Image (cartoon, rainbow, N blue to C red; front, top):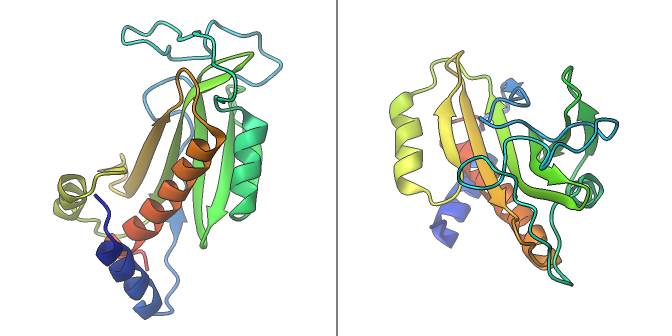
Length: 195
């Protein structure tokens, strides 16, 4: 569980870091293991991708009044309140959000979508670092509750944080998930020596 002590430590590390700029690598959309949501011109595909149930079946349960699932516009507005953000489309026609928080670029991919929204999304950020240490990545995964870390095929560190929105969540919960992402992203950047 992230504590005030670890957040404070991450902030101190960020402020104490040298002025040398380090390159950041934006993860490739669609590499999270499921199929992202199609662009709006594509017909709904019974969930928009990788399926929402345990066996890959779409989760199309109605959402209770007052609760929300993820839709591009709502999530984009939240991202834009916290930095620059825009919707992009990859060569396969899948839409995703590219955002920047505290100088760090990240993406948000949407999964298991239908006309009512998406049942889950995934935040991710990649960092182009020389000599990334797998032991450090494993330490992150052992000691941190939120955000999974791994090295991509180029040996660069990536942070991934999926968010389940099946059956709907309150708008406050969706905002809180974004707040958690910002805290985890900042902590991870310091942890891997990006700052």
